[in-house]
Each structure stands twice: as C-alpha cells, then as structure tokens.
Amino acid sequence: MEGEGSGGESNPQAREVVLISAGASHSVALLSGKIICSWGRGEDGQLGHGDAGDRLLPTVIGALVGQDIVSVTCGADHTTAYSESGLQLYSWGWGDFGRLGHGNSSDVFSPQPVKALQGIKIKQIACGDSHCVAVTMEGKVQSWGRNQNGQLGLGTTEDSLLPQKIQAFEGIFVKMVAAGAEHTAAVTEDGDLYGWGWGRYGNLGLGDRNDRLIPEKVSAVDGQKMILVACGWRHTITVSSSSNLYTYGWSKYGQLGHGDFEDFLVPHRLEALCDKSITQISGGWRHSMALTSDGELYGWGWNKFGQVGVGDNVDHCSPVQVKFPEEQKVAQISCGWRHTLAVTERKNIFSWGRGTSGQLGHGNTIDCNTPKIIEILSKDGNACKQMESSTTEPISGKVWVSPSERYAIVPDETVPGQHSGLPRGNGNDVNVPDVKRVRT
Image (cartoon, rainbow, N blue to C red; front, side, top):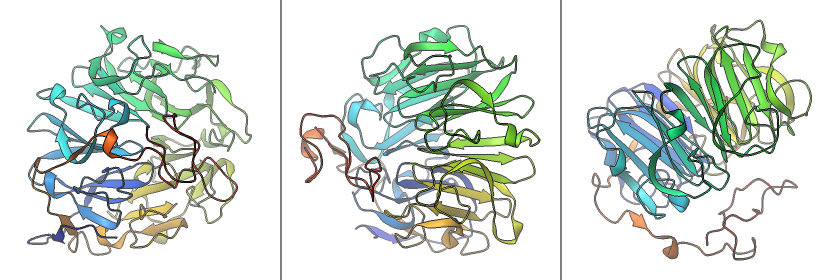
C-alpha cells in the first residue's frame, strides 16, 4: 500500500544497494548516491515517510535526501541513520521507553536528529527491540532506551530517554556492539567479548542465567580473540579471529545450530561450519545466518515462515546452505524478526520469509521460503530507477505523536496495564506478533 504524499523520484538514475537492514516487520536499504529507501510495516512510523502506512515496495525517504547518509540500522519497530558530513544521527519510529533518544517517549513518523549526539563521530549503531547502542570512532559507547534488565550497561534498571556513556568501558576501546531484545554484546579492539542485560537463557555467555547491569567480560571462549558479534532476540553469535563461529543462549528453535535444541550458557563452537571462513553473521528473532568468505550463505533456526530460505517451513537445528539463482555469491546479509535480506555480489537484493506487511518488497504480502529478487532494487531488475519517494519536507511538519495519542490497547488482545502484552500471533504460535502490540 502506497501512503499519501508519494511521487516518482525526479531524474531517475540507476543505483545500487550499498547497505541493508531488517527490523521486526520492515526493511531499509542505503543506495548509492546516499539515498535511503524503506518498505514493510509503517504503523509506528518506522518507515520514515511521515505517515503510518505500510509500503509493499521500496520507497525513498524524501526527508533524508541530501543529508549525506552513510549507514542505516533497524530496530524492531524503529530505525536510525547516520550522516557523516553532518555528524548527526537521525531516528524515527516507535518511541516507547526513549528508544529514539529524543528525550521523550513520543513516536516519530519522519527522521529527526538525535540532538544529544550531534557532532559525535559514530562508527556503528546497534538497535535492539527497545534500546540502542552507539560506538564512536574513539571506541566509546553510549546507550539509550529501555533498561528493565540492564541492557543499557549503566549499572541501573532505569530507562534512559537520552544517550548516556557506558562508564564501565572507560579505558577500553570497543570495536563493535550488537543488541538483542533485552541484552547487548560487544567486542573490543583487543578481541575481548562482553555481555550485559537479560541473561535468562545464557545469552550473555557468562556461564549462568543471571542478568548483568554493566558489561562483563566473557571468559569461556577457548582463548580465542573475537572480531564480530551479533544478537538474535535471545541468543548471541560471535566470530573469532580464526574465522570460527560460536553461538550461545536460547535454542528452543535450533537457532544456535548445534544439531539440538539445548541452550548454551557459554560460547560454543559451531562444528558444522568449522571448515568455513565466516565473514558476516546476523541474528533474527529465532533464526541465524552466517556468510562465508566464498560467498556461501548458511541459515538455521525457526523457519515457520520460510525465513531460513531453504525451500521448506520446518525448523533447522543445523546450518543449511541457502541457494540463489545462478549460484550468485552473497555479499551482505541481514535478519529481521521473521524475514531475511541478502545482497549478492552482482548487486541484486533478495528477500524471503514473512511477507505479511510487505517487508519482502515484492509488491505483495505473500510469504516466501526461498530467496526472491526484489526487482525494483536489483541491478538485474530495475536498478532503483522506478522508485516512489515520500514527499515529506526534510525535518519539518508534524512528525511527533505522543503515547497518549496512540493506542491504549488493541481489541481482542491483552488486558490493560501492561507495557507489552502477549500478542495474538499466527496459527498455533501465540508468540508471533503480526498485529499491533499493546501501548499503555
């Protein structure tokens, strides 16, 4: 569904996809020319088009044209983008718990600057379900949003409406961070791995099921130095300097990939891929993806909607190779909650999994259990030349919506008085929120 206030892009030209990021039910891509487009669910403003409409096809975010955007990152129902020349982080979408970093809990339907971070050179952003973490070029870390389990690493369980520096990393140069539903992980320049926040399933890698309010070093990694880390909803994936992959945490759906459904409380090497050189990893709600140095993609875990991409809808507790047309090699991967995105070396973008909100970008709401090319964005398709663009004026108009203006409760869902209720779900799985979640 195209929302109001959309029009064709002026002077259409061929572009390529540079970066991809997948949220709970939406998707975002950075194109050459520093153009941002988004598609999928827009109910919370996470698409940035100035309205609450879904988009079944990728649509250029008009408000960010000319803002020199160099990176984009999706949270569950919010999105961030960073301007390199402006040294400015922008955020938009669902604002509960302060996850947008604007000093309030209002929803934002068009990109707005995170003023507290203006002028700071940011290296990387990680967005979880309800919190965000930023790493600066100097290796410092700031966090904001929901903090009920200590996922902000500030030593408290109080939410933060504005970015705050994680003091526990003073004197430690952090290389990258990753954010799950309620936990966070980091890798330092020295190769040390840290975890904090919600730890009930061992997803912090610290050998127990306790929460941590400040970052704590993971010691049980066989002396390996870590270079990459990614978080699923309640599991964690990391890669060592020797290119071995380790997983730990929740494994009810096989998302750890060890051939069983057992949780691991410390990092456990994924033997099925021990002969592969892993270069990229991504964690979904309950599934995982790993990319090898030779462009092969492997997936495993929860597969009810085909998000593993191997042609069936059964869960896989061990890695299975994801096949692409003409054996295209994969260059980039991003897991959403129930869908997956990939970019091939031929600059084609593919998607698969849940499609109910248009997050696959195929112009429909159909699920897909094998990679399907997004024609409008792909070099072998329309090469981004026929895209619609939202016409929202840059950083203007009414873009804020306070929580009191939004839903108090969704009909036929949970009782009032809860921050997030059990959603209605699909089929016999009551934990799949394809409907609006409770707002209080």
